[in-house]
Image 1 (cartoon, rainbow, N blue to C red):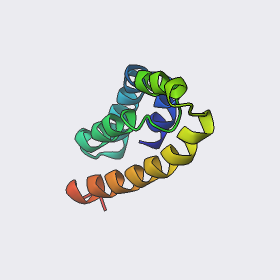
Image 2: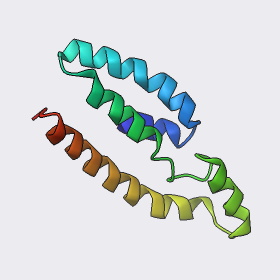
Image 3: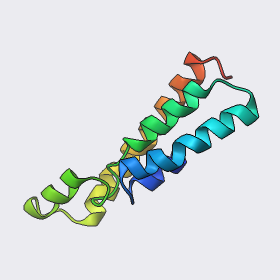
Image 4: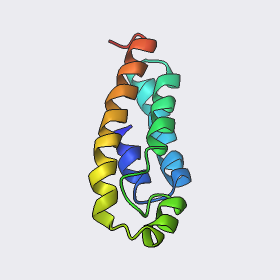
Length: 99
């Protein structure tokens, strides 16, 4: 999830999904765990794209209109991304009994 979250903040969601999904499948097979929680981790990570203005089109649209700076996105987006990664990872671990 962390890998695709970082990727999606500098590339498109589709790119992050295209790179992360095969990795999730391969990792699940090698670890002998269900594929679904890892694919969901990729899905969630691809949507955590609010730490940079270049991550999503809407972020760029409101950047100049709202007189936002790159640091404004990072300052507010990184704590939210961190909170979501911890929460979603914990939910996946407990939901799929991976502990």
